Structure formats: structure tokens, C-alpha cells
Image (tube, rainbow, N blue to C red; front, side):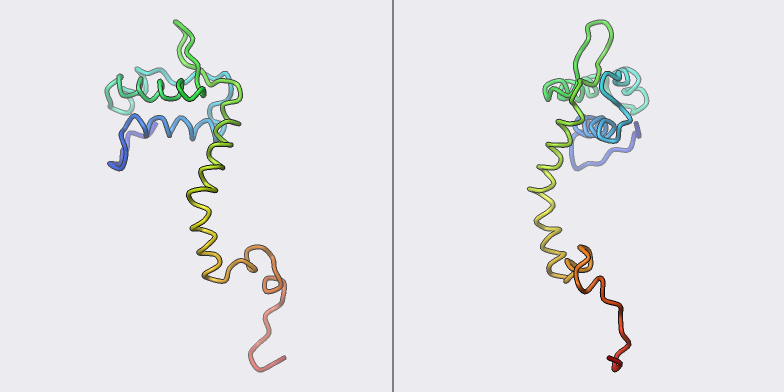
Length: 127
């Protein structure tokens, strides 16, 4: 994990988000172990309790399960749960603004293959 942090949210949340991205990108698959708390803390140069807090949040969200003495593992169905949640979040938070911008700039037909997108450009004054 990249030890670059931004100041917009707590580090434990950024660690959690990175694990979520790894699950969504299929870097971590169902049943795969998460990197150990100690390794992530060392590589990221953060307190192990910070990593543990991030991992606990993943457990609380039913994305990861603890196996006593073995570590933490991606739960079956975690990617599907994340995809549903991320899609819902995107459609609620980001899509309205993106859609409004597309409409405002007149890009809807161009992007969706409407009549404007299919019509060949004709030089001005000719046809």
C-alpha cells in the first residue's frame, strides 16, 4: 500500500478505502487473506492500531472476517456487496452532477450515439 496520505479524511479510512479498491479491482478475491496489520503498519509508516481500526471497520461492514490465529480474510460475496453499495453511492452522489453537465454541454447525443453522433460532418455552405 502506498504510504501517501491526504488530509481530507482520517488515515484509517484511507486504508479501509484502499482495501475496498483492492477487492473491487479483484486484487483481493473471496477467501484471500488481507495483508497483516504489522506489515501494512510498517510499509505505511502508521501505528498498527490505525490499521487495526481500518480492518475492524471492514469486519463491521461484513466485507472481511477474522479467523482467530490466522488473520483477516475477504468474505464470500464481499465484492458483490461493494459493487451494489458503490453503484448506489455513485448514482446518488456523482451521477446527478455528471448528467447535468452532459446536458448543459449538449453531449448527450454525442455520448449516446444519437443522430448528431452518426451524422457525418458537412463543410459549411455545402449541403
